[in-house]
Structure formats: structure tokens, C-alpha cells
Image (cartoon, rainbow, N blue to C red):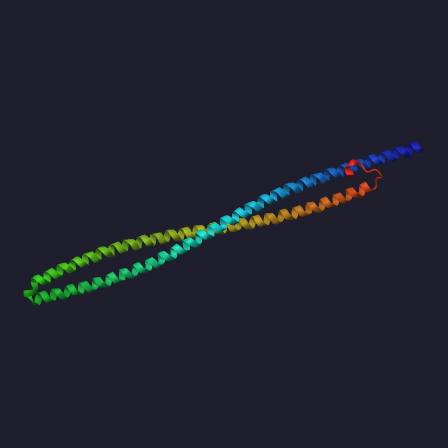
Length: 210
């Protein structure tokens, strides 16, 4: 009878040892998973920080571009004002030319002086027309630059929106990782508690209990 009792005790001890070994293995597995998730979490945080820096740099570039656009718009407004002034001067000059022609018809004695004056006025007209052409060309160039800057601004805004979306996605992934880590930590704590409870049943705990 004593032999049977010792056999049963030995079998129970072996069963408990196997259970403890399995629990310890599971605990190590969960601990390794937590370490891997911690590493991945750190990498995600570093990437998130780099993206935030890129976003700040893009916003700064966008502000500089908008400032440049405002300056170009002011320059364009000034150029248009100059063109209007040139047009007014041209109309005034044409009026003076007509007056000179009327004076030429009424006073043949002043023909030479009037013709010289007319030539001078025509030279001024040509100069003004040339200047007007240059101003028109500059206006066209500024308008083209303005369009290019608008396109660049729109592209930068699209880049900012994309970066915002990526930051939001990374923040969501980070929250999920943190939730998973907390879940694994709770599971690890539960397994350690179970292991401590099993080890408490032994007068001489096995090495896995240390």
C-alpha cells in the first residue's frame, strides 16, 4: 500500500513539473513578444518624429511660397498701374499730335517747327509703344510665374495633407501597439501569478520557480 502511495505521489510530482515547465515556457514566449513589440513601437515613434519634422519643413516652405506669391501679386498690380499710365500718356500724345496737325493746316509758316514737333512726338509714341510692349511681356511673364507658384502651392498643400494622413495612421498604429503591449503584460502577469501559485504548493520548489 505504501508503494502504491509513493507511486501516486511521484506521478503527481511529475505532472506538476511538466505543468510548471509549460507555464514557464509560455511566460518566456510572451516576454519575448513584449520585447519585440517594444522595439517596433520605438521604431514607429522615431518614424513619427521624422514625419513631424518633414511636415514642419513643408509648412515653412509653403509659408515662404505664399509670401512670394503675395509679393508677385503686388508687383503685378504695380505693373498694371504703369500700363494704364502709359496708355493715358499715349492718348494725350495722340491728342497733341492731332492739335499739331490742325495748327499745321492753319499756319504754313510754322510748318517746319510743327513737322519737327510731330517727329519728336512720333518718337515719343514709338518709345511709349516699345515700353508698353515690354510691360505687357513682363505682365505675361509674371502671370505665368503666378500660375506656376499656384501649382507649386497646390502641390505643397497636397504633400502636407498626405503627411497629415500618414501621421494619423502611424498614431493609430501606435495606439494599437500600446494596447497589444498592455494586453500581453496583463497576460504575463497572470501567468507569473499562476506560476507562483503552483510553486507555493511545493515544499522544495523546482528550479523553474526561482
